[in-house]
Figure: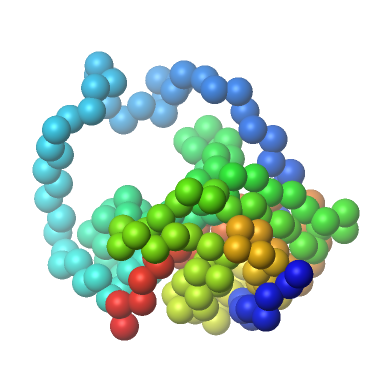
Length: 176
């Protein structure tokens, strides 16, 4: 059953999970014990305006929002695709439609659960028309609570990596 949510948004490989592996030395920022610190202090040069979330307008917001809001998947330092909000994905045979199965246990900081409609609302709220067009997205449809279909203008044989861009982060709450 397809719900009536469609966002007209204006990038494209089937996901194959990699076996768990150690982080290679070239990806480590700090070589240490691997123990989590109790406190981390970060100095930021600019003010943070929550109403800009997740679309950062300065370097400080880019740093903070990058830790607070996630995309459907991420690309690690070796170019490997890693699931974030989506647990898996697949493409239609022709590659114009990509299906993303969202993780069912994801909640926002306020306790609201993540679902496909919230991804659509967030993208509609935060993506500029120029970015939507550059990404090559025709539309996005919520099939059910946890399945999102993204339709592209042209076939994408490879996973549309543009969706890992911070602009496609899902913020959940509309501060505006």
